[in-house]
Every structure is written in structure tokens, then in C-alpha cells.
Length: 523
Image 1 (cartoon, rainbow, N blue to C red):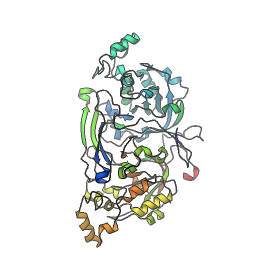
Image 2: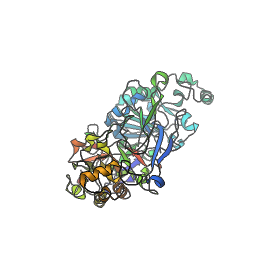
Image 3: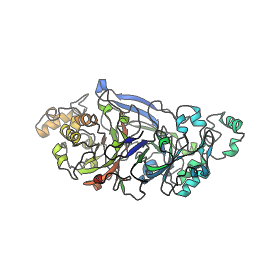
Image 4: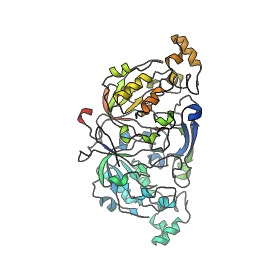
């Protein structure tokens, strides 16, 4: 069943497989590992460190994955990842090749600049098993070229690979055979010599990426509910400047009152996300630094795959109640409609250690309305970097502002500082396992003549108040924030589908026109 926005009636369909502990991975790739970096019982917060490649669960591949020197995921133009889409339910089964006639038989016209998502039904096999990986259907080279000729901008499929498994390293191809008996099994069952039928390694995948068309693998979720329909899709990857791929939340949006999505290829859009990568800034807490290494590289393997260990609370990211309160819901507990809609970018300039007040929010322009997504520009995104000015001395929200946002009935809040809370309301100061930076207590006393704990008696109240009242919170927004201040726009910011997750990387996008219609009073 779709998630339905109670204000607009828009229907949101999740087309993603879950990610987390035990996620199936391509045979030979390292598995996903997750360990706790901080514990509620000891530190009052839950932060989980994980190791993964981005080719686990539903993910989007950059041209760099298979094409040397091509665009990494953070450099692919953002408009590839949202817009009108067709979901094609093709009638294929085990080991079938998806040919152009299968795509045409769906009865839905593919138009230039479309996103094309292919439902083979194989997502029902999803799991750590050989049938899902080794027996799947796959896209033929002819179909890949057909889609290129149609002028599509993104192609996704509900199997583990764009190509047929016998055209990958699972069979007798480059890097293989990972499954030594697969070729014999195929020939015995079909009577076809796979080396003759599949003479090239990943031809469909490579030709799509060479044409600059990103590819999505491991689609799932509610895909079968919307087959052979035209909708709007959002599948924005993380802004990873060196990345070969990105785990992604793929969401289809349907307006039940519209005949079809509007054409959106030319809709002006803006990125409110900081770059992310091996040198990303990190909050000065107890969690260890990033670790990146190459699992595959072009010269040896013909493909580029990076493996990383990190936490979600770095760069532009979203928090959830489980991060700060035991026994509450994880990042998947928010309804999908929370992450898309109209709202405002409000400019509330603040200096070192100043507090954003309820009066600041009440006076902000444009007016903050019930149901809004609210992006707050304090100006401190200009200080973003590995420096104490950004982390220890920034302004921030506190208890009264959070209570005002809850009372106003907003549905999502983002801010351009180090945390949803003022830094002196975090354990950088005298809270929880802190003070992490005890010198701040004396600095504050010398600068203001007051005791820090008197002015900031609560530990992360903005986190707790907003998120336990159903308001997701995004930290470290940036990008085009200044250019959008004082404007009403449409926003999309969908987190990973991490079951048990304490937060998520997120790409925050603002649209000058909605990519799908909404109530006129919200425009």
C-alpha cells in the first residue's frame, strides 16, 4: 500500500529493498557489517558504524563503475535522478533475455528523458541465494541500445545485475566464473552454449554507462503495484564526489487526480547537500574516522568498487528518534510523504553561540505554514569544514524553537549547522558523556559571564522534541542555500531504507516548480 500525504493526497510507493545487517551482496563482494559505536545505556545515544560497498541492496551505478575516467556518482547531473518514469512489467522468467519486444509489449510509451524501471518479478526472489543472482533474466544489448536510442536518462531493474548472469563474472566472463557449474547448468537446461550466446562481459550495462545513463539494480518493494504505469520517480544518490555507486531510496509518486506526470526535464532544481567522501568533516565525538579502500579497480578487474567503513552522521544527513532515545523508531519509521513537499528556506542569520528562538521562526519570511518542510539558513554553512568554528561555536536550535516547530505542525526541518541542537546542548558541553570539550565551559563563562549549564540545561532537546513528534531532522545542509533563502519551493530528501538504522545520508534537493502537482495553496 502506498504512503499517502494527508494534506495533498499524493501517493508514495517505495521501490527499494531494505539495507542493513544481513543484506544480500553480489557473490564475492564483502558483506555488510554493522557494530555499535555508541550505546544508549552508556552514552545516551545510538550510533552504528558500518562497512559496506555501495553495491548492496537497491543502488545506483555511476558511469565510473565500469568506464575508466567517467563521471563518479557525485558528478552525474542531478536531473538524471528525478522526473517522469515508466514502470514496465515484462513477461520473462528464469534465464530469459529481455529484448526490445518485451519492453514494447508493456503498452506504455517510452519517451525522451524518461526514467525506465523494469519489473521482471525477480525481486520476489531477493535474498542470499543462488536463484536470485544466478538464474535471473537480464537485459540484452539490443534492449540497452533501444533505451539509449529512446533518449532515456536512467534505467533500473529488479535483479542483481542489468545484464544476464551468464554475461557477468558469475559465468565464464572476466573475473569469473564465480559459480563454476553455472555454465554447464545453463547449457544442460537450455541446450545453448553460453560462451556463444554471451560472448561479451556486461555489454548492456557498459553501453548504458558509456552513454552517460546511470543504472539502478535490486529494485523491489511495491514495484508490482505500479507496473505498466507512468508516474514520477525520485532516486537521488548521495553526493559522493569519488563514488562508483550509491545505495539509494527509489520512490515513485502518483497524483491520483492527474492523468500523467508533467514533463520535468527543464524544471530548475538546486542541491542543498555538501560533498561527501574520504575527507568529509566529522562531528568531534567518539566515533572513529572514515576508512576507504578499493575492492575492485579498472586495470585489474574492469570495474571500480570502493569499500568503506563509516557512520551515517557525517556530511548532510538525517537523524531519527532511535539515535537519541532508546525504544523509539528507526529511520524507516517515518512515512515516505514526510520527505517530499512544499516548504520554505528561511534566512535567520546568527553569530557564534547565538540561539534561534521561537520569535525568529515566527518572524521568518516566507511565513512558515503547517505542513511545511523548513530549511533554516543561519549562514554557518559557509564555515563548514574540519574546524572548531563550525562544530563548537556555531549557533543552533534549542528547546523553545523545537516546541514552536512542533506546534506549527511542520513535517521536516533541515539546518545548516553541526546538529539539530545548539552545540552547547550536546555532549561537547556538560551533557551525557560530556563535556567532550571542557574548555568550552570556561570560554563561555569568560565571554558571557554566565554558566553554560544554566543557559543550556537540557541535553539535545530539539532532537528529542521534534523527532518524537514525527518531524525528521536534517543536519549540515548547504550547497545553494543562500540563493534560495526567502523562497517557497518544493523539496525532496529520501533517506536509505536502513532497518534498525539510527540515521541516514541524504541528498536534499529543492525544485523551483514541483516535479508533481500539489494543492494550489501550497505552490
